[in-house]
Length: 330
Image (cartoon, rainbow, N blue to C red):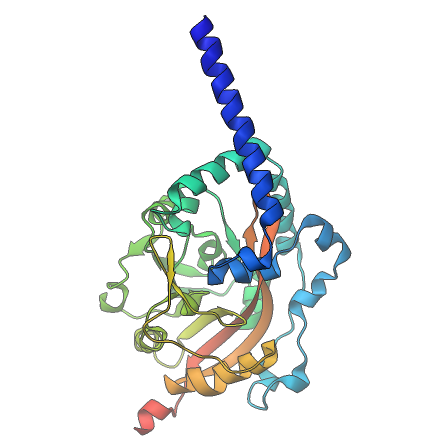
């Protein structure tokens, strides 16, 4: 009996010490202590419940068309906060309030982060779901009706499949790629056809739509990836849905460490509008794509014990193969 009481006391002391440790880390959580590019980006854009109540969330969607280049200006599609986005935010706020769950998540993340990627940790814990666009926002930028259907969708770097599900409602076959083993399991559980990252280009068939959401700044060779996507789309009607976090800060995650990609894409411009124009005129045109539509959306992620949710600034493009491109001219 005494032995059991001692073990209980030790566990309670450890738990109390861990909570105190987390609270002390929270006090230190200022910009100068944040080193990884992703965390710096998250930190600068994080939104707490109190901030959200005071802020006008329409700022997340605001664009100054006069600052867009002439080639992009008429292609901008204005988005707004809708019911699906509100529902995701509400769910994130509720989850962040589960104190013991958040303590457990924080502890596991602390233990595993030196060995395992952040994506895999989230996969093991079943947390960190992302939100890029709602069903109505997707239909708006693709210019499709709710009942529109096509044959094949490929979602590159699909994570747990939450965003894939929004797109998948319009397709007979849904394929996905993901490097993280636990995230692959989540995708298989949703009955998506999971392909290896070197397999999707060699299936023998083409895709009606390929999505590349917030992946361009996380891969080692982004221009090569765009060229492979272009070759894998159905001619004429195939479309690429590409989301990119702006400002553009490329890095590759390797076992919990952040590294510069081998092929470094430098996007010029200080404002969201200038970077969108530069991506359209300089990056996409180099690989034979042209912009069909672009919108500004918040890239949302479930929060933790520190914040109800996190928000990054996204540019979401719909791209099609251009009839004339620099590559074709060479």
